[in-house]
Amino acid sequence: MLVINNIKDLQKWRLEQCNKTVGFVPTMGYLHDGHMYLVKKAKQYTDLAVVSIFVNPLQFGANEDLDNYPKNLENDINICKSHGVDLIFAPSANEIYSNGYPPKTTVHIELLGNHLCGATRKGHFDGVCTVVTKLFNLVKPNMAFFGQKDIQQLRIIETMVKELNMLIDIIPCTTQRTHDGLALSSRNSYLSVSEEKSALIVPKVLNHLVSLIKQGETDTNTLITDGINLISKTHSAKADYLEIVDYNTLQPVNTVNGKIIIATAVFIGNTRLIDNIIWGD
Ligand code: PAF
Image 1: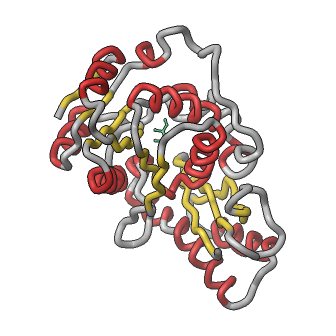
Image 2: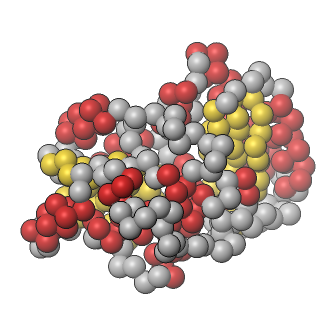
Image 3: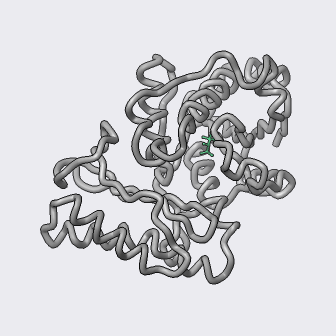
């Protein structure tokens, strides 16, 4: 397995591999089984699996956890090695933004980014789209693999790739969970033992709303109020948002009808966790 830190070496490697298909898993590191599920899919579909490890400053707001974001490159390298990754691209911020920071050219996404995480994390998805575009231009993957836990990110990248005519297949991959249902996330490492217990409210509230829908409740206001109440009763949990949106437009819906996403972000202490369930078709 190769570990490359600079753009020149990556481009040279990609030219040498031009007759091979590449499956790309962009990450911010601190890898876990959720990431390795994406790697498994990449290896299933393409000749070579490439993982990028880059904590992108452009997608963090001023009061967010950029400086404290968990890092362990040595462990990430070992994990990738043992899962058959062919190349890790782990550049510095200076390498990625070598023409100056903040960059003069960014990718802005309209509408899909204004609800859910986009409502409270201003500019976050422009930061994600900009770095993902740069990484796509560098890695030149045939396929890229994204987890459904970050459903808004996934829908936005699918839309960006379509609208900007990028020749890359975006492959959505199911959310990987602990045995008691918590979605795997690098940010779970911030949780204390008691917070880990409280964090189970996140999948619990989503499943609760699905069971109400199955019983016939279609009014999204009623569902959201019920869900927020449940979260507020949980020790050290505070809802950032709980929304029910249309799958295609990511705009809130009044009634459960067609394909929808029930999505939430919940603070457990200082740790913000996100999760969602896709419902209907
Ligand atoms: O999902 C992530 O880890 C990041 O948003 C991504 C896609 C690697 C872009 O920095």
